[in-house]
Length: 366
Length: 272
Image (cartoon, rainbow over all chains, first blue to last red; front, side):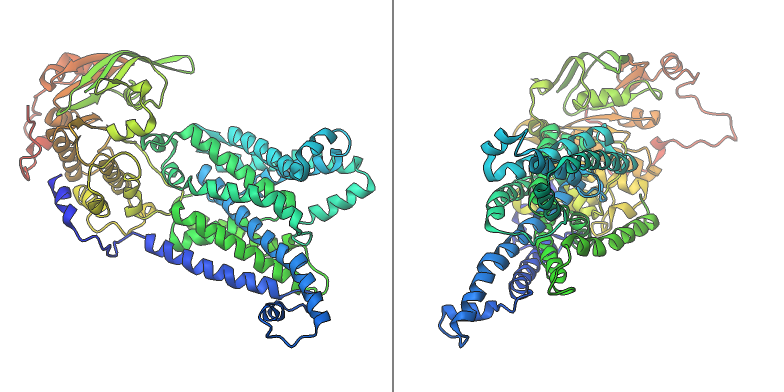
């Protein structure tokens, strides 16, 4: 014990310690910030119209030779279409990756993801409910909530499904993976059935709204959507940063996390609310975009390890980059039309998920 | 001091623990023995407030019910029986989790190196960079002990004694490491901390414990010094298996007792 005290005069400069991946975590965050900036530029400069963000930036400094009419068109395209779309992509990508990571930490299982286990379906039910019933049965509610109605309905839908899932799949702090996935299928199917009934009673114009929303796309991005979902996502992401230490403790199990001083019940509640808020807000503006929440945290865990203090910011950054890249691909492959982004993320995420399953099958511990 | 008075625990209507009282003073190692299902782990979980209980439990005179989780974490660290991790942590990262809560009592500048010191104490020098999931069961158990030690590294902090709760700390260890881990527990007590350990090995209990609590069917069957508790009649009663204390087998039948191990140093000896 005295040996520990004599360490106090050890040099403060930290040397590289075996098994300490915190330097790697910080490096990864720095690299991912740069990656995000690059993908943001790519997102701003690609699209069906030939609008050039470079010309626009050049015009601010008077250094462009482009003719004024083309410049005006570029300005419109960039301010009203590409910029909101880029910002929404960053917000939604970060929210999807973070909610996946939070859920994996909460369930102590790397296969948990709001899209896979029905939370997105629940959030979607909330959104469809407000689109279809918002003008009739729920009219007072939509009037009261204004532009936030869709977001809040999604949030409540996601919250209810997460609670049900947690109650069904977790017993004494242990989540049975099979129960969780099967319960997710059941909840997703139930939410899908109710959504189906709502779609059945929807009017033609509502059906149009539903179709646009349900495609899973950033194509409808506008400043109103950013104003509605952005604050919720920013608050959820900020709050999740405070959950990092608790999520680390929780990996040891609920009882041990409690012994380490974590107020476990309150913590789980906070994590569930953060998952539902991030999922709900992103589903409300972009429909169901799958697999971001499972691909991104999993890749990062392989590189920097499972310490949530680094994994949380890194996942948010890579989630944002990943979604912007997927969006760029969705705009380019069938240009001038565009693919729903959910198709792109599923095309990447589906095989990736199978690869995770294969790896786990061969790993030491299931 | 840990005091439990008339503690009972019922799980889904069934009484697991019935009117258990005990006192564990700082500076002492208290061993809890008893057959499977006698309530040893349940008692430990009540002491950790994992289970709701009737009766009174206090740590250093403070009612356990009134302690916030973070306060309890500064007063005692708990070694669980089994710990599987869902994510690929390195050994160092697992041990460092013990530093995230509670108070190690070590200055900030030295804290970064504490996992290495703790690992050295459990004979896992050089394991910091390995993956936890790739270690054997006994090695994982020792990693967890290193984590627990980090949480309460200094046994007496600002005059307040702290405690180790160990649930079968040597259950999957070889004999060398059994002795080594019991030495760690013993020296924690000798330095002024308190230890409560569930043990299955009666010889280790006799060697290391200042007092032994014997449980049978959720009730206290005996509580006192090793020589008071480890008697023919009490063992036969508690374990439902007739045994004789200090009885050597017939010539030609080899037997090995941990008491005969060559002592590395004097830290394992009881102070009292």
